[in-house]
Length: 195
Image (tube, rainbow, N blue to C red; front, top):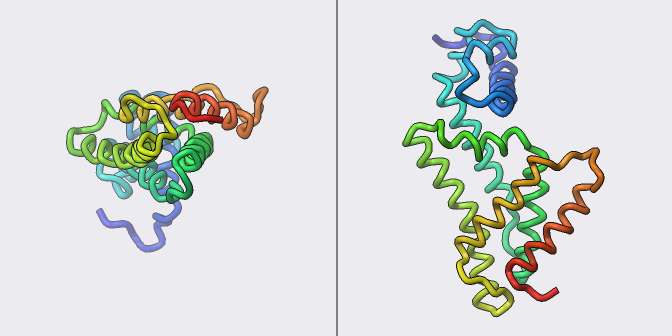
């Protein structure tokens, strides 16, 4: 059914996505119904289908948009491998600290994607991982890093950096700047880079 003129689709559509993001992150995709999303937005359940064909598409689009935004925001490589790695660490932590619900969904709800959607999300994730692995390879080739397997170290670094979303709070003992500085030291040591 087509949206009628003046239906406020530019307002309701983003509200549907925001509600789905909150509810999926809080209760898990499988436990959230379209009816629950509609109630959160304040519309009839049938109205949701003006904004998304189904719940699977909604999940996929939330994950895809998060990863596409991540890739667009990732700074272009500058400087030597050590400088590039420090930039990557800082960027990753700061970007993800501002988006805990999107991060949770992007990592924890992969199992709920159908095969075609899963393949597209994995392609985007690999594009991001490749950027970090290229930095590690550059560091190994230049002698700045001592890494046996750049793929394993790439995945380990991303998992470690993303993990702050499970515990970091703005009101906590350390500021984000302090946490980023400590994580950078751990990553630097993990790749065998000199101080």
